[in-house]
Amino acid sequence: MMRAWILPIVLMSCGSAVAAGELVTGSPGIAVALLLVFVALAGMNSPLIFPRSIGAQQAQHRSAADGLPVVFWRPGCRYCIRLRIRLGRSARRAHWVNIWRDPDGAAAVRAVNDGNETVPTVVIAARSHTNPDPKWVREHLSSSR
Image 1 (cartoon, one colour):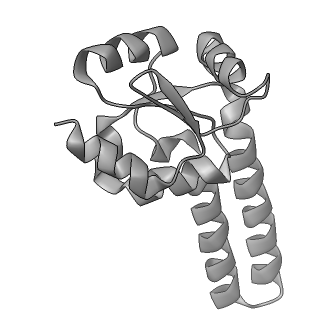
Image 2: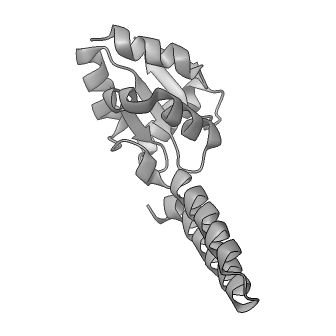
């Protein structure tokens, strides 16, 4: 669990240090702007922007019942962030599995990616798709109603 928060914590610490340095030199406007940039970067790299994760087995069971995709992801992955942002509100309909929190999820991703933990890996109708186009995933989410 802590591994997912390392990058956001480092970004917040660096941002605070840089902002404090700017305040000391007498540039409060620059300090606030830099702090906001670091806060935004920390937020984008935190698990907070993703829907609640469930276990791989539970996600696969739910997907078999409702036909919705299973998205395997990990915090800090820029392609996962891109997919999450481009899916918008429809992202909540998918079943999200954080491979850093679920060993079964990590094993499932390695099994379909030649032993690599390449994410995002999206499973739709028992077929895996590594780093798919967000538009394509959004179409599958909307057609699974």
